[in-house]
Amino acid sequence: MDQWIDWQATDLNKSWGYAFMSLVRHSVAHQDPDALAAGCRQWNRHMEILDRQLDATGAYVSGSEFSLADIPIGLSVNRWFETPLSHPDFPAVKAYYERLSERPGYRLHGRNGTP
Image (cartoon, rainbow, N blue to C red; front, side, top):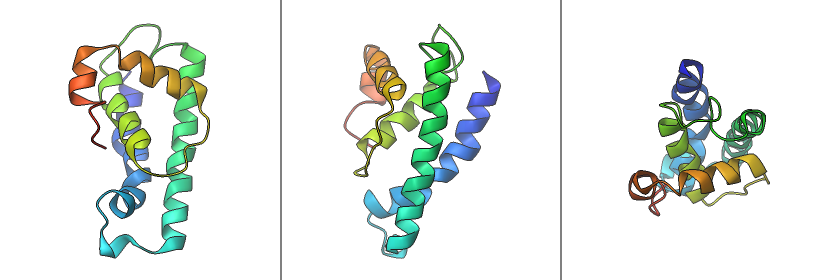
């Protein structure tokens, strides 16, 4: 579980910075088309890593039961879906998003229309 919390805090979070600042915050300092494309590719590569992990566990990040790791990663998944970029088909990530959305707390604090 700890490795996935660390992964979210370091690798995954670093991957979405440029794209998020460009597409959601509309930062004038983040409008380079090449850097934006690279940022989107990097973010999607990290979501592919998550998709493989979720496919292997069949449910949640660390296994068959919801854990502490699902809180930060679940928020990152919402950010990815809510950011207007091309989303490759990651069926395990999509199923995970729907599974998390069954939880009232996630609907309130995660899947609430805010990236």
